[in-house]
Length: 263
Image (cartoon, rainbow, N blue to C red; front, side, top):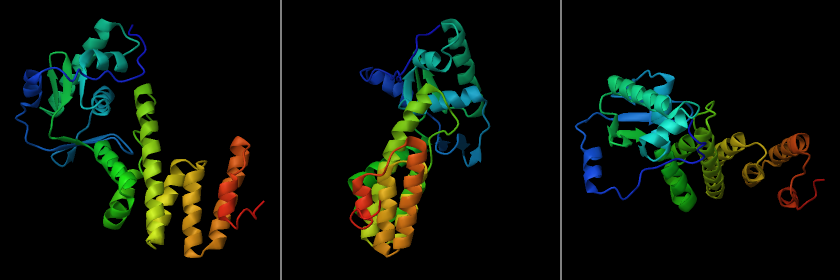
């Protein structure tokens, strides 16, 4: 059996130009989209492509590992309970099935696998949006708030419990919640309260016990003059926090509602 793997095994970045040319030397011209947010879906030339579970996991692994990986890393991660020989046999079968469904989508060159350059991954696009929102929240909020919220509101492969998915899903969750909170704050300052509420509520949905998300939602209600909504939001959060963790909201959050007068 393979030893346990807790991190992706990516390819060596110093492989030389000949490897890069072979991997990039695709004649595939059609565009494909690999959706990992909210669900798994492969869309090729405008149509959804049905794939077996092993093929789905193969494509998801390669995409999450940076689009280029070593074959032994993939085999060990996806078939860790199998013998090494059996794991590589399963990998070859999965590669062949992907190639039969969508020729040119996945390249196997020696010890490496790679996604074709014509494949876009929705998580990559969403991560760019999140970084943009966090680094330039004002500009992003004004220009494309609705698009940003759509990209930031979906979980990564919900219902998938492989370690390599769970780790990446938690990283994405933290990144998108920070971005949603930043987006809500800047929309609140701009007086775009309806959009600010949507962004804050998306952050709350991502983690109802996260105080910074609740604070962003309360701030919108207060800025808009809806004190009753702010109090109800606080009380729901306090009740859930007590029930699930036996904790109380911080003094900072209480201070948002009348400088600590709520007890």
